[in-house]
Length: 378
Ligand SMILES: Cc1cc2nc3c(=O)[nH]c(=O)nc-3n(C[C@H](O)[C@H](O)[C@H](O)COP(=O)(O)O)c2cc1C
Image 1 (cartoon, rainbow, N blue to C red):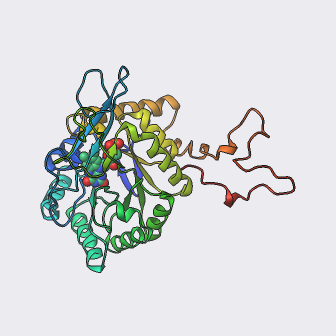
Image 2: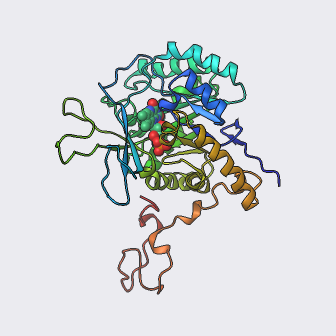
Image 3: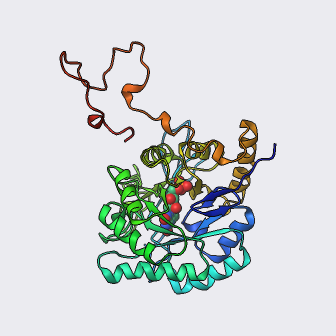
């Protein structure tokens, strides 16, 4: 049976549903060109701002590993270790919009059939700064970007009106989205932080602002470990560290829980899944929960900087997966397991009268109303 590996997502045609997410693999023209040649259906640029940023001294990202014979989780290189996670405190692109504009143009001229999404970020404290979002959006789309991803999720911003601090504030989420939508003539995706109590609320605010899709997850706030020998953080500058972001295999189940909340709350909206994907065995969960595309960072960073083997494997496994299950395209199974995430009390037990979701059965009183029950996942 002929399978169709292409997808339509927010009105954009992708030859396959796999994108490199905004991160070091997408920080330069040469990387993005190589990524398209390698077979990625789309690329989200490293987040672009108006002004250059200055990163910390030394390493901006490292990988944590663990092993079966030794449960240690550490950045130290050692034999027989398996990847646990990536940890980073890298800021957005150190190249400003003026540097990116001609490059976006050249990339799209060389690869008109591939999808280039420009990730952008600015402050949001006043009208001038909302105007900066609009400047960035217009510059990227005029240079040829197929879509915009608004970074409401960078976990290392000091400013209260930037990055994940926008993603923690419903009002800012809808205000910034609306400002960008005012000038956008391409689809607008909002990339949210997983570090909020109920991500459904921020997603809802983005949709009110006009978002075409929600992207989740960016990295989870985290610290590197303290070395038992030196008593120093495994990554530090002059002994100091600040909260950074965790990615890779360690965040996969947590990112899936966030995605399940989102897709259940908005079953008719578009979602792009990220977090711990390196092959189809992980991507399938995002698709079955309702995602229309999947993005990859950590696994690609560890594979020749842009993941040529990762995308080859994903493309092969994806086509084989569709074929094996008799699906003609992603739409035949997208969201197929979305409604299988239910309240604890709805899971079958040895005896049906055993458990009332934590509520004591009180004679004469009705069961708790639906709105009193806890959210499905958290
Ligand atoms: C070193 C590094 C830099 C990143 N920079 C950005 C960024 O500029 N913008 C952004 O939206 N996400 C950024 N991310 C987050 C990734 O795009 C991705 O959401 C996250 O790593 C989870 O995916 P993974 O588990 O495949 O790594 C960065 C991640 C890493 C590891």
